[in-house]
Length: 114
Ligand code: SF4
Ligand code: SF4
Image (tube, rainbow, N blue to C red; front, top):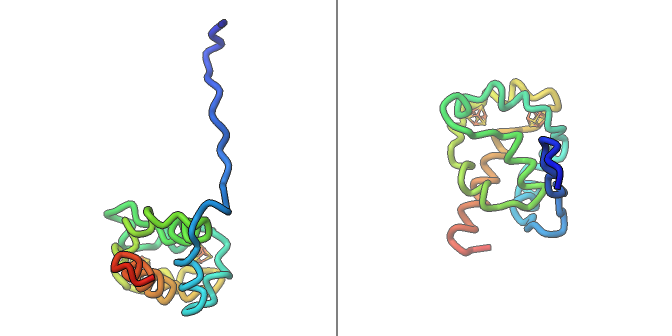
């Protein structure tokens, strides 16, 4: 085969039916404003935890929507609850409460309670 200098990538599709959305559902119950999130990333750019780690609230909400739990469990506890993200969010999402309920759901999953 002729080498044109590039490779064909495999399909990158999001399988919304493949994930488990129990974290998102738990967060929605405790803090419905999570649905106002438009993934702008403003919260992450002002985040204290993001300075020294790969923590990103924007990413966590996206992962919860897609039902990808493993990655949420890896980083959700890095939040320091400083509250800077609440002031930054242009949609008025109660971000600190979102994280609180996300951590609560993550703890329950780790303890096999849900
Ligand atoms: S409360 Fe958590 S997510 Fe929000 S800015 Fe502080 S460390 Fe970041
Ligand atoms: S700043 Fe608000 S709207 Fe933007 S990604 Fe963060 S939570 Fe979502």
